[in-house]
Every structure is written in structure tokens, then in C-alpha cells.
Image (cartoon, rainbow, N blue to C red; front, side):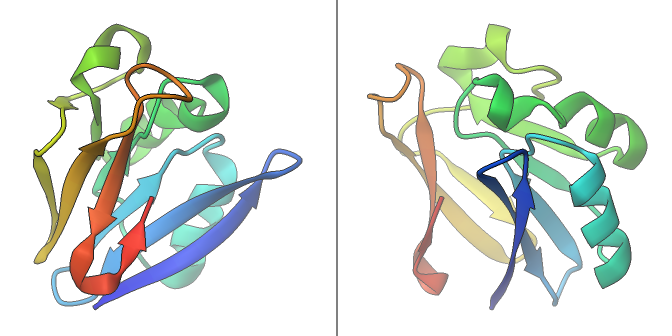
Length: 129
């Protein structure tokens, strides 16, 4: 089962930590800032393994490089936005999947907000980011 922690960032955004307790894998969705994420990881005793970016806007990628440098995590995002997502390791498209430990997310293309916007659907946990 996926543990989900919501973290307020900036003035009116949220970042989400997703954790697979069986494997210890932890992802952050759209880290606008690194510090609130690092503080929450430390408080919970979780180690960051993944960054899952939904799109390339600054208020969703601002913490990418700091988090990657400090944790060694991998960054996932839309292949279509590869040039605009700092530190991206894995480019994704519609129908791809991402494993967070033993938990799978299906990648959905949802262009509209940006042309390369993607969503992560954790079917077993009924969670969509």
C-alpha cells in the first residue's frame, strides 16, 4: 500500500511524497522546492529514490537538481519535455509505467496545461497525480 504525505510549498502549491514501506522506495511528485521535501523525508525517516515530474513549469521542477544531488534519486518526466526538465534521467510517454518499489504507476499523457503534461496513475491505490 502506498503511503502519501502532502507537503505545502511556495504560497499555494503542494508536493506529494509517495512511499512503499515494503521496499523503502520513496518518490516526490513535482518538487517545487527542495528544503520542505528534505525536512519531511528526515522527519519520516524515508530516503528519496524517485522524482516524478508531471510537467516542466518552474513551480514543479525547482527542487529537482538539489534533491538529485543530495539523495542520488532518479528523475522521471515526459520525454517530450526532456530539454526543459532539469536532471531528467528517464523520459516517459503515454502507456509507459514506473515502478516505485513494488508499486506500479501507469503514465498517462494529459496535454492541455502543457503539451508534454503527463499524469501518474497508481491504480491499486486509487491515486492520480
